[in-house]
Length: 106
Length: 279
Picture (cartoon, each protein chain N blue to C red):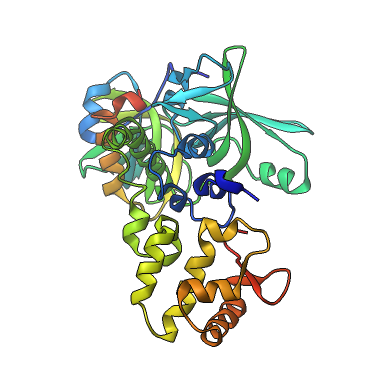
């Protein structure tokens, strides 16, 4: 039982609040150049993810890692989420998990 | 059998065939909720489990938002998986925290199930929350890989909803007494409303009803009354006819149809009948 190191649900906008902390985000992959993946967050803004992406990379990917700047994540864990994903619902969840119901998550 | 102490709601509350809400309909103050709530399956985050209160009377019982926690469902990633011959242990990381999980492998289907669970995989688990020496862990009943990743967001939204329901809506209902238990009555399903009907209401109500098509419903309603169930032998057809004020011929037609539908059955002889619903 350990809740000392949670990973926060974030979109691009919320990422700014967690620089240096552990976060998780779902991105739609736009470009992948070696260790740098540019993706569209669930709030439609772009973020950059660094690390070692899996091959192949699906359209939607969840990354878990440390927010190293306001617009980038150093990913430790990559999970392919397939080629279709409900980004709207996920984005709503990001907002709920950082707002009114934060105490259930952090 | 039950004499004058027969309590319809108590007698039916455990019946396997009764719709659950209907047992609450006749008497809002009668509470089956404690029993049912303790058996319910709660969607939770690890953070919530970590903060769950230990109820004082029993050291293995937890309470979250005022509800006893027994069976839970979580969604997260599998970490530190260790497989043994008899069991599999792993940490479930749902992003809010990590919790130890243990799945006993007893049968072939179990080992099949756990062999498909790999490190790093997203899974949905159903299990029992237990506390031992201050450590909280899950005794897993079922573990299933997630194939549609929308289930992750869906699970956490479930957690939020259930938290909201248990912490706010339930309290509101407690003050105004029962929004929910009244719903079955308004739904108008004949099966559900029957217990609210008293014998007095019944005769006046049936005095106004005519036509063959309603006789079946009348017989069914009559046989489902607690009074009709008090005797194991059921009710004699002449008595039904007399109470419902219909001729025995018409009554037997209706009874025959109901027997064929499996809604009632004859008991010790061909003249006594009981409803199948209340056993």
